[in-house]
Image (tube, rainbow, N blue to C red; front, top):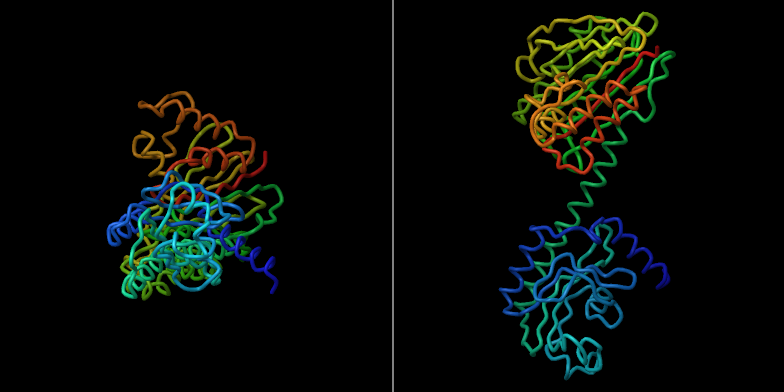
Length: 408
């Protein structure tokens, strides 16, 4: 491998970490403060070495997050796989003429340990610095290495979550179902890199099945359970007797759910495209609304318990009809939580009305959301209206919305 290729791979690995130019985070600042205190130095930094600059994710005692790469001690550190220690830079032939020694901040002491990306590429350092010389023992090297591995674990954990998120998104349907006279749109926004919400659709005897489910909790644990729930429900909705199929999926999931002390809410529906007839079973979900073309709103809430609560329970079936111009909207409770945080009473999406402004500082925004939903020309625009409210906001829970529209 050439030097140029190696450096390109290193920079690409750094970019894939997604850490450059991000906001400060307490999990990194905590390590930096601890490192500075342990070694009794005025300066400490978690430094990423970019193409032509150093960028500090966290730092103490330095004048800003960006510095030049040329001549940097950290640039030397990432070229080796061990801790670099310079006890007195002014007396070290390699560093005596260094611009950071001769000029600001007039460094005399440096110790840094490289940080690696998941593929082993050295992308940065955890380092300590001072303007006076220091002795640095083997025990000190060991402590700095351990602290650097702590930081490295945080960086790699994010990368693992990103990869897991890519895998989870790959399990969601990539294309809308091929239904003549219908438009379908859906999106899942995990509160973290991965989540416990999912949506699905598949061809089944009697039409097309749709599923939206929500595993209690967030993050990796919920995502693992969601993968099992998706497989079980995809099999369950193929049963011509939908309540029986959901019950069988519940039974199949019982061991997993009991072992993790969690449960899954789910809405499962089978649509007969020629007639618009919709048969559904609600397992503790309840956030299902039929928006009729004439402006009426029909709540399709069910009374079944979530999966994993009482596996032997028989859930009832509900029927409805999608007329021309009607839209079915199914959401996870992440949407309810978001709307509640904006002041909508109960967070109930069906309470959104274009003619009435809810109280509170976000009342106008909520009223505009109601207008956008009502005026949306199709399923995708309806979905986009809900997603616009979530854009740029902290999501307290995974948020998923599915819209099925029968063309007018």
